[in-house]
Image 1 (cartoon, rainbow, N blue to C red):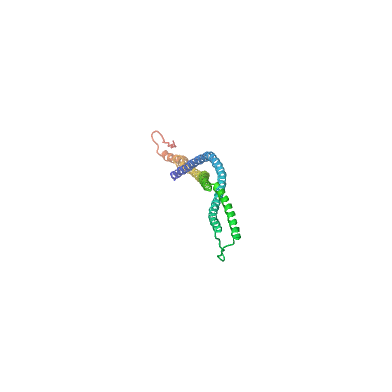
Image 2: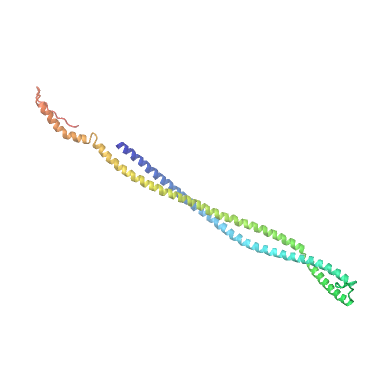
Length: 273
């Protein structure tokens, strides 16, 4: 039974030492992760500051680019409206020219199809001549504006601004990804630290249980050791022999006294050496 208790004590000691080792290992992991987190924080802080600054600058640039793009698109719409006005003016000028030719010759009434009086035809002729003069002046002004070239120039500018806008938006997205990755890295490390902290608490609880069990088994081993010694050859056995030997010697000597020899009576004196 004593040997069995000793084996249990050895097993409990092994379990206790194992939990101690695991605790040290987990502490090292937590320390390493904390240092890694701090190191990453320094790097990430620099990256985050840089990314945040770039996002701020790109956002301002994107806003300005969008405003310029809107202005160019509005300018193009204005030029296109003028171009349409020019086309309508050319068409109207052609129609008015035909009317002038008509009223210079034999003009007829639209209602009765009879020749118009000379004075009435003159009124119409003056009206359409004035309109044509005005149209030609406007058309000349529009021609001088070189609308086709301006529209092409605006289209090129719009193309450049759209490309710049796309590039800026891409830069903003990339820097936003940098921010998210930084947060994700820190979250992963914090999650790992939480896991190791939970393992540390579990191992400490196991160590406490193992320590308590080890203490109980050691007390039990002391008890067994005491009784192993008590029931051994130097324990109760010696104590009993010490008490019994005087009686044994007296009894033996009683019978030896009745058996004298030529040298006298034999005396027995047994003792524990």
